[in-house]
Image: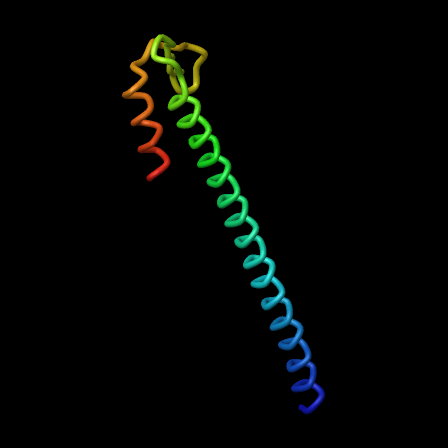
Amino acid sequence: MQVMWRCFLESSKAFSYKMSSENRQRTEHGAQEEHAQKEELKKKIKEQKIVVDELSTLKKNRTVYTQQPNSNIFFLADKGETLSACKGKIHK
């Protein structure tokens, strides 16, 4: 009976260690995903700030075009509306 109990304890320790190892791996994976999302968000914010800066420094006689999402089509846009839309994206 003692041998059987010891065997059970050893296997439960191994199972417990395996479970804690899997949980740790999931936590690390989740932390990596969260870090990647934060980096992507920082990159998008930086891009928007650059766009706002570029639009703010344009001369009055320059034209502005906006690109349709997921296409290579551009449309003539109002500079003021585009600037305010870009500023709004930063604040979100």
